[in-house]
Image (tube, rainbow, N blue to C red):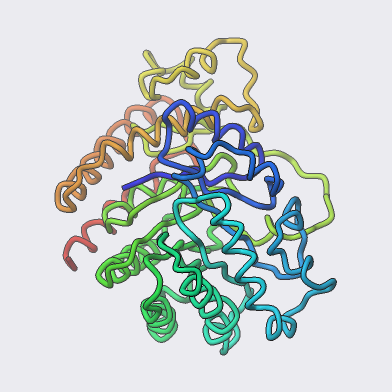
Length: 386
């Protein structure tokens, strides 16, 4: 299973980590990277990476998106849905040509975003994106693998009718090799703790794999480790939280209101958790060898110096996470049965470590191990179905 960097703001952190051997490639973000700059990136890096075209909102020119030749606003000012009837072939050509020019590993068919998908959403997606892209790829005799973008809302996992509809739509396309899948949810906790949701995600991935499709999961947080037992082809690592959980606001031009930044957090593979730095400071005072609860990396010595100023915008915690989580994913066994056993054991060990910590330091619900019992139960439930 591969691991890709989900790039965004400060994507240079991802590139710097990748160039040190962390991750297998990158998923490039047009709203954050100017088109010409992306063209100038090293060929070797792009050949193991792919582009998320980010046409989620047709008429929103967030960030650098309008520097890309396929951006709809470059075809027609004030581009809107009716314009797709006349422009879908040109849009497909420009989007494919740009991806081929960069020699990406995969060619990605974009998708649109709707807050509440209309009844004709899948038909329109086929007419406006899938068919024109596949026709053009056939015309140019493309040999690269093709991924279909799909945003999966919670209701598509929990409602059988909607789940079957989206699965039939994805698996009904004969000219794609896989899916770039984005699970959208509105959970407020840092880690997902919903049993039904997580089990349905695993079932969804399993069905796609049974249909001989590659499954690449974008916008993953620590639950990527859990998702791995359904045997997807790749998961992602991202720096800020909006790169580890999909939200459409990231692609909207909103008024910049003053925002209070979150507390800095540090990921621990032993705990399967991001721990708020205020608890790390408490652990330093109250737990002998507290550093042993956190992985070694080239960044750890600096972060654990007394004068280190914790801040959510500093690079070190994220680069530490990239290194640690990449290593954790690469240690997963290849066989599904072995992987399930391994992940369950890792969860048990994490729960035991949390018992030690919480004998001395009380943690809030976003730094403790409260998600782990749910994850363990989800694995047991999924294991019974395979």
